[in-house]
Image (tube, rainbow, N blue to C red):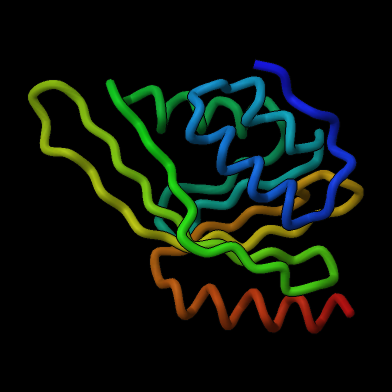
Length: 139
């Protein structure tokens, strides 16, 4: 699969990052991050991952734990100043285990085509309020 260079808007880059997560292609997934990027799962109690190696390892641990994994975006909004708010659904399954279905929000900050921060939240409305405030504070 060919992947286009990161020359698009924050919204388009965010959309592509969700497509990458759905693809299972870890190199494509990590291509949206820089060496100092942060992927934050702390609101879920799953830690914070700094840098390409740590972020890729988290993706492999999370997605790789399942036989089947799907990520679909329900909502994607450019809030300006490089801040994008998203709501997505994850569905995953493994042989002999109950399927997993998660609906979550992601707040991402983009600079020069790179996700410098992605923070994931279980509470969608809390995340929406945080994203709006973050976009306004970066203005």
